[in-house]
Length: 311
Ligand SMILES: [Ca+2]
Image (tube, rainbow, N blue to C red; front, side, top):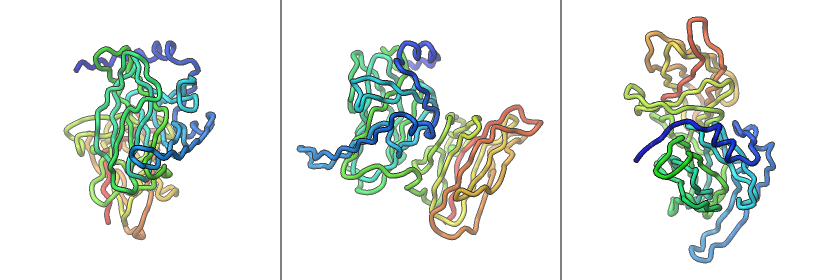
């Protein structure tokens, strides 16, 4: 497998986008022509009730840089696309299966798909353009809540002239979409790629043997945020902290709890924030990047390595 990570994003963008409208985060998605068309179709073969949601359904959380493309070939006439590494979407849903519909063409690249944390690496290239194509399907899931996450890698495979990934719509079997943060994390160690986490803004993946699970995410844009909904009485946030780290604001159930300065030298992974003694039940902890740092720091990066949830 040859992976070409040369960044020709701007040139590709000029060539590809008829109508570029930047969808940098979920907050901007609803300002697009949102048409939540949920079709209930009775599939004749599997007898599964299929609910179709468009790519701009309000329950889908996009993070990173996404663009909107208008084309009569798309379901509903529009689709979302990105080639930015670390861009992702999260869709929580209930049901027994899900199909991602998109475009496969000669400029398409790799995507990583997670269903309830189980990873599939997907190459979306096709020599000829195919619209409204089933890109990925999961079926036979236990009837109940699930999470689909798609992460874009900015990686090319054989034959392609780009690394784009397209989102047109989703078909959900025997269920429908859930609002974000509907599915709480269990107690114990929760890694940064756990399906219970919902990211907003641009977060970048990082791999290092010294990290919990050998991987983490990090962000520097003001307002970038990650939410974890959990079932328990306490939670700790593990962060990598170094000479380029900045200040994060921590919220619990929507209320500001702390501002955490992550600058540290020498660098290491450690608990950045911890809270205990909460009423048992479901809570949401949010970490927000402030874009600020102390005078010694050379950057404003905030890392998420993992969480520890206490029952
Ligand atoms: Ca980790």
